[in-house]
Length: 229
Length: 229
Image (cartoon, rainbow over all chains, first blue to last red):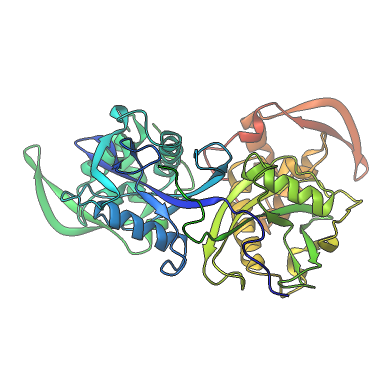
């Protein structure tokens, strides 16, 4: 009754992570330069194969590959979905399970032997062509992040623990690619009751601005109505 | 330089489809009774392995397996995501790429030799335990469908080409599991301009009700504000 796992050919299966950050109002993505075939020398997403002994599940596999190749540990990973077809990898039928996240831009990237270099790139200055279908995966992830920025506080993940409302709005605007009305943005944030004042201030454009932090659970808060651009 | 695809052990990879329908105000899901190991004799989702020769991509693979096992062709398939871990399948590390859709409940289900029976089950009367982690996949898909019913016209996919507004509201309510205010529902539908009157009527509870159809492109319309329950 034992099923022979090797009876049918299996597709190649890997994971990839699309890590976004915002630096000086610009949305960036974390890439690695491939040190091995296929697509050696091209930049692509940090990812890799599943280690059947070591990886508990897909997300753990994505975190392990991300950390091994860039030194970065994502604060969370959300699944973007699976892309699988006969043409995306010249080695044969291949599936990638893609994850994405937004995080503060950390320096001190490290890299593994399978990677020549790791770096953050502005979305409008990607080192094209990228490996495999990674440009499409980034576009998919960017679209998903944009949707999410309209109905959630995902932007806060790009910031340190405490931040000003101006900083939060700037992250939203970098993701959405367009300005938000300050008054309406602040009213929506206030109504949502998802932030609390830390009690501290920071001097911003000459006058002190209140610092806020995200309330527990607010990471998954959904506005019932989208923010207006 | 050729990469040896067999150098590393690969996880088992399959696809599964969660097909929903609404019958007499009740949300139902399409299941098949497994005729082979593992989990032989249990009901589960229609799915199967990827055929590297035959399947162009994951969605084509899901449609092929669905049709082969149930005779049903889904009007569309939306990806729910991938679930992969070391414990969901007793044969070893396994990934499923799950899809879901809403469709009219068609009769005349057929079945393949790998399936004993195919049938629609009400969500609150599933033949438990289901195979593998299929109960969790159904719960995930139901949650996603519920979200979608709050901001889109997905409900129309459960109906024939022309339908009354009462029928549409009943589908929304079956998915959401709670009643909607008729007046507010109709105003939202009207404002969205996603339906057109066919010019025909149907007698409904004694008086004629206008028939509508979905305008082209409206399948992907998103309300900027969720429907209120």
